[in-house]
Image (cartoon, rainbow, N blue to C red; front, side):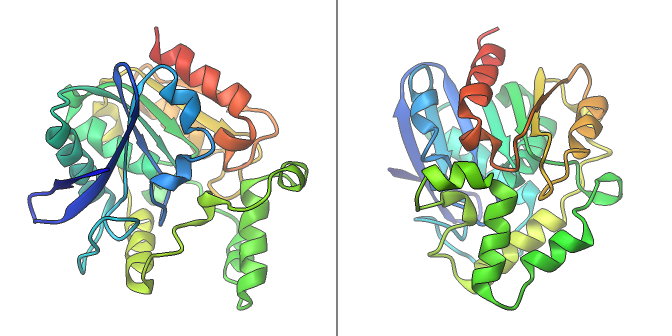
Length: 258
């Protein structure tokens, strides 16, 4: 592990593995690089994988805020600068997909190919999760809220054969303040007007049973980004990249190696 320093002096923890052309992988909201733990070896096999701990997570600093997806994108570019990487493929899932959108918009020369997984454009054009899902996630009983989130991430069948830990449920080391800042950053994302400016070849991936970030957001992104391709994974919920790694991983590799 190493640390990059952003223009505002925040230390961002960086992890490197694998060998080959660089691939920057961006995790979901309130999650560190451990989000990718189960599938990282699939990408290490053919890429130099770069991950980071967002500010407020893992081994990165947790300055007061405010946090935004645009700000996270600038942190990611600072990581590329620190590593001397001029251009990389970028794969972002969930909130990481929102961050990846801004990297591709504001630093187009830094992105060779772009993969957006289980994410949305944000703002008024995005399809929001249902009131029932919101209610379940806000359950006053922490165990009930956690159970609801697990059900949105994975099928019961997958969970029965894959024990703890589930890194996609968030970074347990985060402070309450940092967790709230991540929520504000994700909820405040709105790249709708900027998406047509993305020039990198783009693949949009989504599970067709995703209720946490509704599947309907995928075609919105694919239609809004020039030339983007859409790949819906049958049966997959939000954490498609883990439960359906044998489908999602090869789809990403095929796209990146074109």
